Length: 190
Image: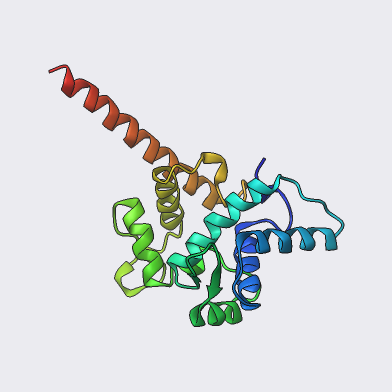
């Protein structure tokens, strides 16, 4: 079961919850999970998944916010919001997703390292005519496979082109891994 099927549980909502919880002082993933449950209860919904699944999705979102330097880990399982995080929350009160995080060089460097190739920021001068936003989602999907994240963790709505681009990136990474495995098998038989 995917969290993205539920209102208030999309990646944007997860990141927003993490940032808001961190504005109250040092926070934990459990604090954010409790906030999400209260948000759901406030609109008459119950938790659609076990606590462990909430923690997995929140941990992934927290790590992305840490790579963008919007949150800072405190080393004991807690995290705090950074000045950049406060500014991003102010600039994007409706939520933050990877399209916002790609504006931060640290996050782009993280995605590039995971993808094994440079990614371009939409609208930047070094993009000369390359305005296809699906490149970012493709690279995110590629990196997700390399991180061991399953295909079902696609953060985009199913009826969006970004969902397909992410899925294509994930599948390309899987195919590359399978090709590399076959090559390794052949080379040992030579």
